[in-house]
Length: 95
Length: 492
Image (cartoon, rainbow over all chains, first blue to last red):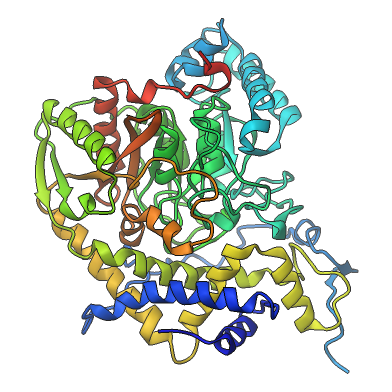
């Protein structure tokens, strides 16, 4: 299945990636090549096969609701590129 | 003691030297740091060196050893792939996105290996976010193969493999999502093991595709890998997918006895994609195992062909979800002067991620998007089960499955970068093992025109012991794993 540059622009926005006009034709072409590769999946019958999301079909373990780790907020916040007073800073989102 | 003796010594020989005080950990660590400093300009395999801390840790290990204490890995130097979070030591995942990221905690693998007494020398280069088969997608530049500096080392654990092969460390860590331990191990002539999914905790490993990612040891022999695997493995409360399975002493279990072992040879792994000379080396290695008492049995893994298509839906889909966390807000690269929140996201991500990572995020986002989820993601997960069932059926009649680790020896740098699909074909024999969650290892099987070939051994779930023992036997009967590249201290 081939995709158009418009398809790529739509997916890029969903993925929050910006692709310049000049890159778009090449990105589209290479994306299409990958899609051609994966389209092979349509040649196999999977009726009634349960999708496998974990190779051992494991399910989530439960644990007791007890404190297991201590507050490392300051250490984690230290990685933030912009912060103030313990808050992450982002551009204004509310007028 | 001449450097070459130390640089060729096994972990158990090093342990003997250390515990008899024939050498100190400080001397050992200094020797290896010297090798890195002398050879890394040519290879670009190590991107962060922890010289001062390594020497401090080595002296601590020497105190333990001089009291007659310690265990098989106390004082042994090691390099980590730069995908493992190391507290206070920058962890880049080969990406501009994380160029200055210093984690607030250690990955469980790092903690466990530290607890076992190893000394961290530094962090190894890798394909960006572990996406690649040539180590050419790293933001920090391509890694070269010590066997031929014009060739790639494989990927994504290419820095780890090249460093190990070049004598920069006796042990290195890697991770393998679709072949990222086994393919570079094959191309660099070393032993590398991808454990069963769940054997090793993923806590603190920067996530690529969470249902496929697994960390494992890379070393000069199966025995060294076994020592390291024992130290790395085990259930972890911090990783709900880590398996509640007893961890054997993998090294102690090695006896080299493989009489009667049933080795399945999948016809589909000897297809037209396989270089005929690689095929010949693999057949020679298999006949060695036969001489040692194993039985070779032809088997079929009929859906092998679909592994690439399945993988290149599931891995990018999981990656697109995992990499959504890089938003320029909490950690990682942030663009300059964003005008609004969307601009912050778009530019931080487009500047921070390289081309291959962006391509996979796009593919994954597409496969998960409304209207395509069933056609791609759901379908791929169904085919994944069919591929896994191929293995389960085969393991009803065989104990181990064997074939090539990669279709070719190392290729020239730059030759496959422009064609993502050609690059993806490099992993044709390894991807299915991750989809099925099985353990697989690559062990050296000789050279073609001076470049290494790797034999892949695939085991039943949680039966790393049998593939390690099979490789161990091969390494007792042949000297392929002892051949070193004409590089650095190994130069003739």
